[in-house]
Amino acid sequence: MSDERVTFELSKEYLELVEQAIAREDASFIRETMDGVNPADISQLLDEVDGERAKYVLDVLNNEIGAEVIEELEEDTRRDFLEEFEPHEIAEYLVEMESDDAVDIINDLPVKTREQVIASINDPETAAHVQELMRYDEDCAGGLMAKEMIVANINWNVKETIEEIRRQVENVERIYSVYVVDDNYKLKGRVSIKKIILSGDRVKIQSIYDEDIIHVETYMDEEEVADIMQKYDLDAVPVLNLQGKLVGRITIDDIIDVITDQAEEDRQLMSGISSDVEEDDTIWAISKARLPWLIIGMVGSTLGALTMGAFEQELDKYVTLVFFIPMLMATGGNVGIQSSTLIIQSLANRSNFEESLTKRLIKMLFTAVLTGLVLAVIAFVIVVVWKGADQMQFGFVVGTAIIGVTLLASIMGTITPLILDKLDVNPAIASGPFITTTNDILGIAVYLAIANLLLP
Image 1 (cartoon, rainbow, N blue to C red):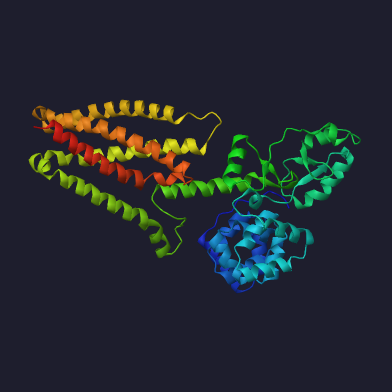
Image 2: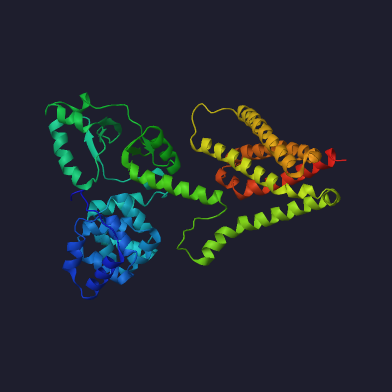
């Protein structure tokens, strides 16, 4: 199938025409207007159509296009959509997919349907690949890999290799490298298509292959695989089992999905959403994901109020102090989030030459002192301009408190993600509501304690 796609724009008018065509079972209209349209655009259209009518659209398209459309559907939409299909119909689409994509879809099906679908796969090679991949957890290299790849024996010559490539390429969507193995299927290296084309028919693969090849093992975590592929800028990476045998490959499109999912999860955690939710989830699911950190925020605010209550006499005597509490809370929260974000970024992009914890803390302290001093001067000027030169004492209190709050927030923002990382807890949960709430309490306490010391 050609990779060329026509530009497609979903409109209400076209959607209405499709719905009318479905109603009158006008298969030719659907085939003609969707000819050459990217499957991702067709899947967007099917999101707007109920399951039974969407199934009709897929039934009139060829299975190869239908398989791509199913792959492009959102997981929740696809799960509901596939309920309209018989197990043998789903199996027909899976044969057209790469094995890793087929397994992802099978794993979303109910257990009984899953078994029926596997039993209905009429291609022995696809069935064997699917059953092998289902042994692995979906979040490890074995669960990410596809079995389809181009493999050449180290003892073949170029002519034999080209013939084998022609045979294997029918099952491989993209060719990034030809992997070279020995008679026991142990990975020896790779050879580029360019070298194969430029070499004579009788040249042995052994004399032109490259031994320098990066690989991953089946048990490796998906995030570790993503880090390796990002670090070495790989389009694909071979996967070995514990015996060193080549069992599959992971391509960049699968890793992009991993990176995207991880970024989305971190973003939600940093914003105080405790589980993976989307806009179209139920009201209860969205509320349940938001409530834990909101409750923690309420508890933190209550503790902040109790802290202020401990300095009730000072607040009654110097009402002006109250006006600057929001400034201090906002500064502490922002500094804490900035510090934690930098640490989380460094944890996500580890190197072999990481700075020691001591060096990180020293750098953080100097940064906090510098930013604190600048903010303190600004705060002092704001107080004096607003309240008058006779209120300089409040300016000194606010400025000194700003320095203290900045130091404390920087420390919290730095050490909390590091501690959580050592405890194998996702450091992203240290950001957002957690650090902000903690800094609010500490900030108020520091501010009012300084006021108590400096004011007469």
